[in-house]
Image (cartoon, rainbow, N blue to C red; front, side, top):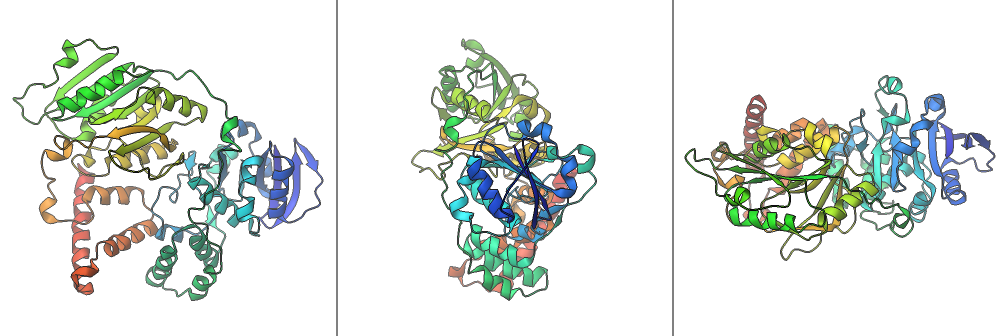
Length: 511
């Protein structure tokens, strides 16, 4: 391990290699970063602010970096970008939970690390950047898109020190505009300019214009597969797996799912089916669950209360395996998908894997393994001890966003969510049945915008800046130029619908 010690990310103090001071000729912090990666590609390249070096937790580096596709840092006092980044980015990376290992591209110069050979993949793109903090965030933002796992990691420091500080931004508005132009769609930098005028009461025209002279890196492809992935050790003991399936009115589809599970190269330990029918006089449609012979234990609950959250929570109480597969009642899968997925999870130390949930005739949207901004409640595998601790919020029954909300609970507990395109589940999208076909939500007649459950999600997890950006973009997206709408009347109408959604979200919170 090499440790770069610096003062305020501006001056190199010294470099340690295996606990000994290393003589270096270069004084520029960014250049020494690249040079050390080239000279020591198999070493972990770490950095730390001089005032914290005695508290730098070297003993936990192996736990922080279990494989080479990881970049991690921790903002003890300096978070680099201001919170205005949330205006144009509503993804979970922005609102970081400082108390747990949390997936984010937001890097800090206070402390962090990355493997030398992994770092070298980014030199061609970012080798000319002179600001160390800007460089770290550029690597992480681009890397996350290309399969680099990026984290805020409190284990870099002792727990007592972590709780003493609240991170503050260290960079200015000009750097923020430049970063947004480089790493987001160009329309985002124009939106950011508007947000500063509207919400910050400033007119940063010079920052806007300067950003257009920066090079564009949005969705730039960087190959990490050839140089890193092939050397990751494979692990062959997958552990036990439970499957939970909520179902309503889809007998034929569910039996297809169970048939696919029978054919898996790694059989589930237990399949938990929660069948729902709102008619109190109804009887089960799934007599095959008890009359047929299955190569796994089947636990069948038949209830008259509806709601996907309710059903999954009942199933989660039955879980006792190492892993939990959240399945839908209308999907199909190949025989090796569960075994291959678990092997991948153990190889990369993944706690939650969301599989490619493709529909018939759809083309692959994204072709790389990466940290994921949402969660699939019908196509994800979660570590058992984490899944058992967390429940779906019943407020999201019969609405939208219950899977996103469960995913955020996982993140807040320190569980990262990884998407993998190569492990596919076919989503049949059954034309009948399902939890949203039972009845219309009680707010339907009021026409709120957004749906109250989405509003509830935003209020629970967005920063104030993210909420303002979310609201503005919602209004803009729903404005139809083709209808020649009066923009003032439209905006007032949307504000009324927004207020209705807020009122319903408050009611849902009280349930």
